[in-house]
Structure formats: C-alpha cells, structure tokens
Image (tube, rainbow, N blue to C red):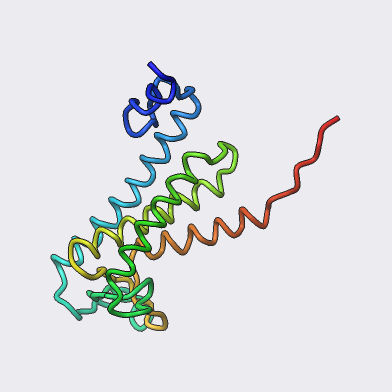
Length: 177
C-alpha cells in the first residue's frame, strides 16, 4: 500500500492514524475535544435561552449592567451586517477549513496560537450551526452598552485576541551554535 493512502485511512481524518506519532495524535485529539467542549457549551446555552425566554424578552442579572435576552441575529458578530446569512455561511465554512488546516500543522509548544485557533473554530462552528439550522444566530448576553452576543461570539473574540498576542510574542529564531 502506498504511504499516502495508509495515512488517509486513519480514523478522524488522520488524527489517530497509524502514521501519527503519539504526541501529535494526543495534541490533535485534545484540539478536537476542546473544540467540541466549547461548541457544546455554546449550543446548550442557546438551547436553554430559546426554551426559557420568548423572543425579545430580557431578564436583568445585574440591573442596567448585564441582562440575559433572547435576540435573533441575521448579521455577523454583535449584530453587524444584518441579513447576510448565506455570505456568513460561506465565510464560516472557509474559516473552519483554513483554521482546521492550521491546527493540524500547528506546533505543539505554541499554546496561545493553538488555543486561539480552537476558540475561533469553535465559535465559527457554533454560529454556523445556527445559521444553517435556523437562518439566524441566537444571541443572549446583553451588557446594555454593547450589541447582544453569545458564547460563540465571545470565543471568536477571545481567540482573535490570543492570536494577535501570539503573533506579537513571536521572537525571531536564533541559531544555536
């Protein structure tokens, strides 16, 4: 059997393939588990909000500071670019593919980069699921001075910040003599 075919036959798209070294397999499996954990938190929180609050309803947690609200968002994060569902589906799919490739190729000791990519992918998947399933994204975290958002938006934002920090912390490679 050709080496390239053996690699492709491994389970979970090569994450646990026979050609995968132990450290790489564990890293990839942990990445997938983290993505699904954040995705699960996002989807469960949206399901709870949808089942407990009617559209437009808002419950103060800290009066005039933090409310839990039920909002349908047809735009991007924080309600930007309304009614662009198909565009955001396409952008989300492209981002997920690119980030997936980056995660597979990422270096094990670049933890800020990896966590940032995991959070961005989780958030993109969470909002993509809503857009494909419902035609809109469920938002519910309302700080009253900021557009209403959700866990997926938070993951994307925090992930982006971590990516920026990881790029700023880069140091040029120094040849060891």
